[in-house]
Length: 167
Image (tube, rainbow, N blue to C red; front, side, top):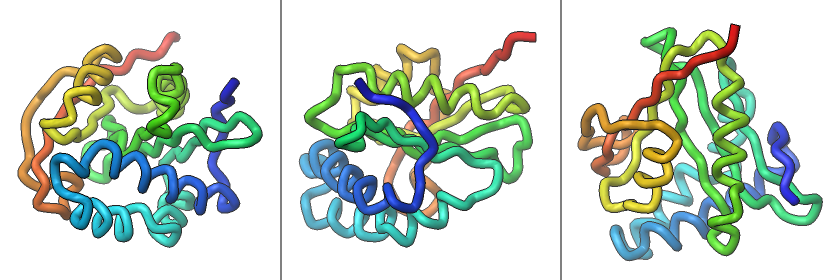
């Protein structure tokens, strides 16, 4: 059984490796192994992850069963739109997909931003599994970008979900 908890600096080497495996499993067929290796070395390095770990108005969580990190998620409040939280990352160990880890990670992150009215994310248009996953969580397509993450020259579907908190 996996438990969702806040990530720590001690998790970052394992999280970086998980992201590498996840990206290669998902994107090698789309971008090629070399491009995926280049992206993961930059975006998913331990140094890059360390910056996210200490980012204000953000949550960085992992799914941990005491032996393995089975998934991770990172979300942060949008710098410009103060009522929007952006889900930057949600990845599950490829061998563990389908066990509810992604859903549990999302459920945790979704509750961490009570001031947010909407959650937004970007997803590769050819990543049909992820698009179906997010649609199942209530996200709908609201647009497209040619520059995923604002830094990549990678196209993405922009999806958004209205958040509602009790009370």
